[in-house]
Length: 265
Ligand code: ADP
Ligand code: MG
Image 1 (cartoon, rainbow, N blue to C red):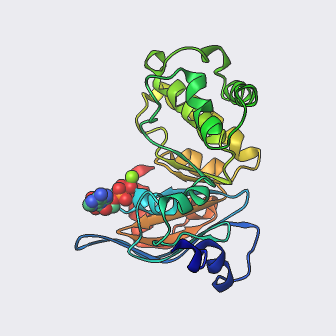
Image 2: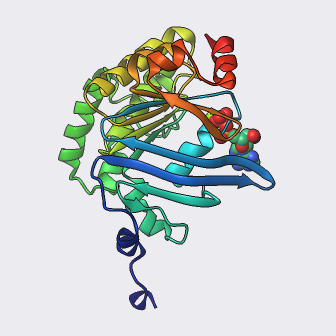
């Protein structure tokens, strides 16, 4: 039965606009309903290679839902999503989706580390299973990434013995281990004690300066202002305003953006 159907991944290439190698994420007229509730409203969103996009907005505005749709953790009700030119079609099987999903690394508010695995095992699990690296290659990669996030010496301990900031740095190393085209962060510092926020932001800042492509949902306005290339303000399921961080923070064009910034700055 499979053999008579066109491969949806390659078939979709023909109908999409010519592949622009520099567009990593493209969402077109995305809508999402939870029951009657209209949570994403005609969202057009694009992220280019090496861009750092800060996604800001009030709680409940749809930020998490947007990035969860991009990563196929949620299914949009309508609209189109392309990850590096590959269309995320609703009719793709989990197996067909998985190589596309792998293009995006996800970092969550609550770390989501595997508690029964050491720090190093957390980082090398997916490269071993999914990328089929040899044990030696995976360990070398894991150690390199743990060094990068400043946690090489924690490689053999279990997550329960780490601080929140350390856990999140492991989660970042784990996301990087899959060599994604872009990293999606959903409030990566919101669950942290204030004194631990800085060490995570520092790692993210380093990644940004190295040219990583990043979408960061954040309440850290200073980070958005200093590190991002573009700030996107969402409210009530819509992108209300977006642009250069300096300009958007200095003179927001929309009343809703102004009101939000007045509350958080
Ligand atoms: P944000 O991340 O900006 O705080 P969310 O994307 O989490 O916003 O939520 C947007 C809206 O969608 C909220 O009203 C929220 O209650 C609703 N929502 C989110 N996830 C679900 C779900 N799984 N089922 C029903 N409603 C949801
Ligand atoms: Mg959220």
